[in-house]
Image 1: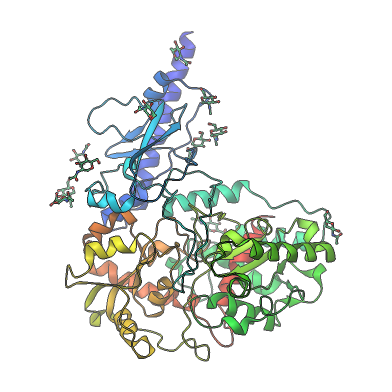
Image 2 (image 1 turned 90 degrees about the vertical axis):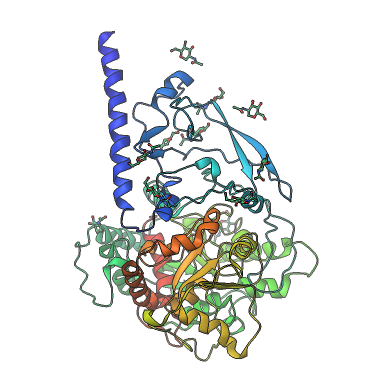
Length: 591
Ligand SMILES: *[C@@H]1O[C@H](CO)[C@@H](O)[C@H](O)[C@H]1NC(C)=O
Ligand SMILES: *[C@@H]1O[C@H](CO)[C@@H](O)[C@H](O)[C@H]1NC(C)=O
Ligand SMILES: *[C@@H]1O[C@H](CO)[C@@H](O)[C@H](O)[C@H]1NC(C)=O
Ligand SMILES: *[C@@H]1O[C@H](CO)[C@@H](O)[C@H](O)[C@H]1NC(C)=O
Ligand SMILES: *[C@@H]1O[C@H](CO)[C@@H](O)[C@H](O)[C@H]1NC(C)=O
Ligand SMILES: *[C@@H]1O[C@H](CO)[C@@H](O)[C@H](O)[C@H]1NC(C)=O
Ligand SMILES: *[C@@H]1O[C@H](CO)[C@@H](O)[C@H](O)[C@H]1NC(C)=O
Ligand SMILES: *[C@@H]1O[C@H](CO)[C@@H](O)[C@H](O)[C@H]1NC(C)=O
Ligand SMILES: *[C@@H]1O[C@H](CO)[C@@H](O)[C@H](O)[C@H]1NC(C)=O
Ligand SMILES: *[C@@H]1O[C@H](CO)[C@@H](O)[C@H](O)[C@H]1NC(C)=O
Ligand SMILES: *[C@@H]1O[C@H](CO)[C@@H](O)[C@H](O)[C@H]1NC(C)=O
């Protein structure tokens, strides 16, 4: 008996110790940030240590002894088992709608005890959901520049009511009934970049693609590639074109070399133009990524094979933009026929080639930039690796580790996609922050409300009056220090790549947005992430970044630029190769 008590005490101490170590590690990890507030954003969903000795049902009393773990000023909650409420809110400003989130054990997040030392979490936690616009009116969103103040209760839910799942980026809006997305991995509300790292490594560790029905030589090649990447010599990047701070782990980028050496792609010949096989139709505008990728893939001699038996990857060559353009009936409010078209295509492929059945489609991939594509491909092509511009890990079925965030690029001149490349050196960037755009979605109106005509350093506009070649807009991008990339109807925006293109440090305001090439790039090294709720504090956040730090980031933006450029003829490390690399990388790590 005494023994047991002793044991329990010891394991509790262990839990505590792990918690403290974890908090300290997190703290150091983000200490590099000179701007506490962003660091605090990172914390806000920080995952806790695995609770040792958690055996099923824990009751309230016991839970209270262990949770929440509090270390210094930082309180950490384990939120990986949150149940996202499935109800959708009605439109409008519903303040105070309450959800009950069952939480049997100590691992569930609860609002931190704000006033007292009483750490007893209620068994039922009621989260008050506040719609973002009203939240700001009501001062509920507290802009704190100190990493010390964490309040998960303030977080905005991911199940947004204002998601009519419509819009085509900046293009004329077509109304479609709201699509209810049921998140496979319920994570409370906002998924921060730090959470994404965790989810990605969880998924890498636990999720595998279907075991092939019969084996093939490519399986062994993939396994070998994986081994080589995992055992790549550390810091032995002999390629001077790669600047290590830009990457999560530049050693692992050996995968690129291996891709060039090994990868073979089979491109299906099936499918009729213009939805399939007609990249020329989509080489300009905001969906250009899918068109350029298709063009380069189809023309490629190095990677493409005509023998499906040799292929590690199978490309489904359709354009989500043309699918919408050709099949969507304006005003119909239904995308069923678009979804059906893709389903028919998969059936055709699966009936004709045994490569689909061999892996259940998990070595097949698609590249689609239209907002709707994420949802349209959700059923028939869910097993595929999907490169999608609408990479919303909170609301859409976007699976980190399998799906790939496709960079949205606004190509103005298909003849010369590099026109206007670059911008002023930092010393000639006199504007602190710039944004211009239409009032799509619910974040931009908040941005405008707080910053339009409020401050001479903050050039925050609605859509700029049109000018020849959009000179005005481009000049702002070239002469601003920070370019604000606020989400529109969906999480993605062409501004992220535009900013990099013009050497302006991107400031991403789009909760749940998985940035492009997330598998490989260390985005925090060259971009700023600001939570939507911190918009009122935007200027302070930017000002809290030291000039030294700014210069470092700007330099890195210039260095990472090569990965975001389309060339008429693809070159090493350009965006075409990087997209293909992301698909390849996910394929390798799922065998
Ligand atoms: C969170 O809690 C769950 C059990 O509810 C556990 O399986 C998981 O490992 C925990 N996650 C972390 C990061 O501690
Ligand atoms: C909680 O723990 C107390 C004391 O150990 C016990 O009396 C009570 O039955 C437990 N409640 C539940 C629901 O397990
Ligand atoms: C947070 O930390 C600071 C500095 O360590 C300390 O002054 C402050 O009292 C702490 N606040 C709380 C609530 O513990
Ligand atoms: C999360 O909770 C549900 C029920 O509350 C349980 O079935 C599931 O196993 C839990 N998941 C984890 C990872 O603990
Ligand atoms: C949580 O409690 C409910 C009801 O008490 C129970 O049905 C459920 O299995 C519990 N979940 C876990 C993960 O313990
Ligand atoms: C949570 O909400 C439910 C339903 O609205 C209510 O019955 C319950 O008392 C609330 N619990 C707390 C702790 O506020
Ligand atoms: C919000 O808070 C600020 C400062 O505390 C105050 O000046 C302002 O009037 C408040 N706004 C609203 C809508 O309450
Ligand atoms: C904020 O909202 C609460 C709840 O709706 C309301 O009671 C309060 O008066 C509001 N405060 C301000 C400053 O508007
Ligand atoms: C952050 O916290 C420190 C110490 O607690 C305090 O001196 C400072 O004023 C705080 N900064 C802001 C912006 O609140
Ligand atoms: C980086 O990757 C290499 C090769 O996969 C691995 O050996 C090394 O441990 C990694 N470094 C870190 C810090 O993860
Ligand atoms: C693949 O499986 C489907 C469904 O089981 C079957 O209808 C189809 O004929 C198979 N394809 C080939 C090429 O055998």
